[in-house]
Length: 146
Image (cartoon, rainbow, N blue to C red; front, top):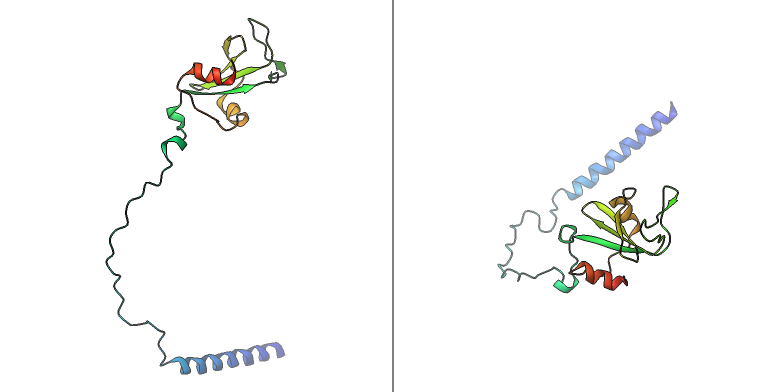
């Protein structure tokens, strides 16, 4: 019961302080309040700036690239089996190609085959950033040492 009496006394004290503060500030107006808005000066429009990277630093988008290639030096194990070239028996030093939604394996001897156990999501998880782009497939093979 006493806590209710104290609370009401605090509420009355708070109300009295608010009323006094309101009376003191009644005739005061904040600076700039009610004054006409200042018109901004008409400045010349800012010059248009090309905020894109220069052409030599731009990376082609995924729809501008025919495919991606990454080297895979170690043996490639898929579903518990080591991937082996059916023609020459190579089991390491692959080039993994991602093109048209399919993954291709290419051995050092140049034999290629579609690998159905891999998909583009696997490729994207395991590939690093592209270090260069090439105009032809042969240029890319030369760069990768194949």
